[in-house]
Length: 311
Image (cartoon, rainbow, N blue to C red; front, top):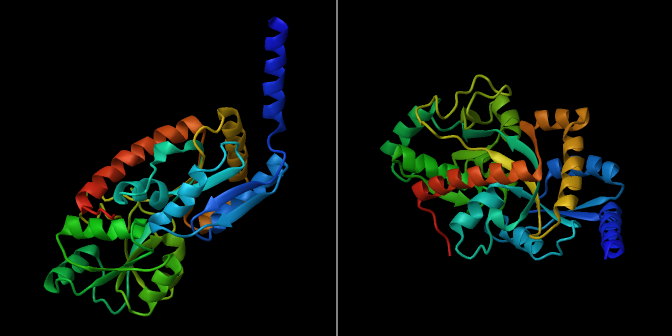
């Protein structure tokens, strides 16, 4: 019996050491520069290429999430989760079929500052002035989003609920088309990542009103926070993290997490993330599990406030 146990232990150890012995696939709901930056460094550490697969479809990226949920729990298929895909979508889509706790946590990646931006034709220079204008023209102002169930959608609905105003929601198929709609005046208001909005704010094609982070962003210190603008607790962020199919062994997830942490520590990735308005947020599987559980409670309260539910 001792010999058998020793043999089994050696077999398990050899199996763990063999990972990875073929390419790994990282599924993302939409094209993601951050994912490609990260996987280049991870591949070097793991000794195997990492293929980034864009898999769009379903509200809030639910198609990509379900595809990874059903994959083999062997560490060769991963999901770049986000606020929209893993925290918001399961709360508002009744048929999502998963929650953040469904997946096996792997690693934290980043947190990105969001900015409330308006088209310059809108005669306001603060959130307070925007609220006054919206109340004077109920339902006339249009806010864009990257799609139903995405973070910008929830932020727009949260502003409506907290300010007691009416605005029309115009969902687009992604953040890029929504930005084009804002620049063209199809919509007047849009919440989105600072990296996407600041170049247009700087050249005057758009006007920034506030950031949604807890503190002012070093990227745009002149912009107040939503909290400073009179909305206590209005703190949202686009977070990204990596998860694996349920049942993926912890030894494999820890190996992947170490590769992510190493990639995030590189000067090249740090610099690129900083330019995008993102802050590297490495986390072990255990740390990520705790963090996501906290975020899930926060977003459950926000969804309850906005009363969004989609069949």
